[in-house]
Length: 178
Image (cartoon, rainbow, N blue to C red; front, top):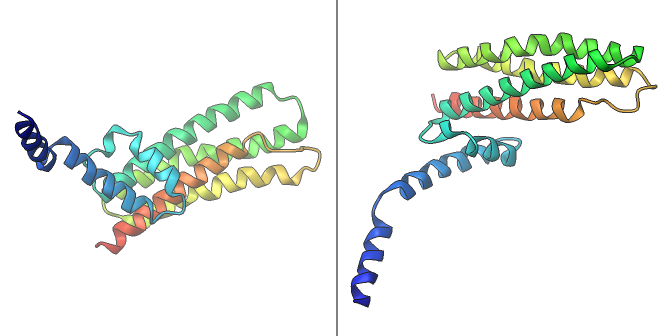
């Protein structure tokens, strides 16, 4: 009886099944994310997406850009809320800058996705890079006013920069494979 169980365990562990496929997917995610500037964020983002299951490199870039799009839309809504609540003139000036640049970002990242899907990687890169520039512009607007101790959007801006940078890194991998 013991020998029967041992044989079954040996064969079941060598049988390609869900575990084997999942391991290969995780290997691709790990391999790609290790090539990015923010591997931990990359792995966490991709593993939390059901769409990463079976995705190729281009698909992983798409998932990261979708995450960046959602993230930028959430930040845009947060900026609108802060603008309604803020009475301080300097803070409003900074938030207005952020509102304007995130208004661009929420349109640019979907363009990056469109260009990625159509194989126009240079254009996808350009629009993904705009997300980095826009989040940096938002963040730097707060440094122009010494009376504002800290940007309320630092974490959000950094998060968008990380996601867009990861997308750029993955698109670069896709370009090298062509």
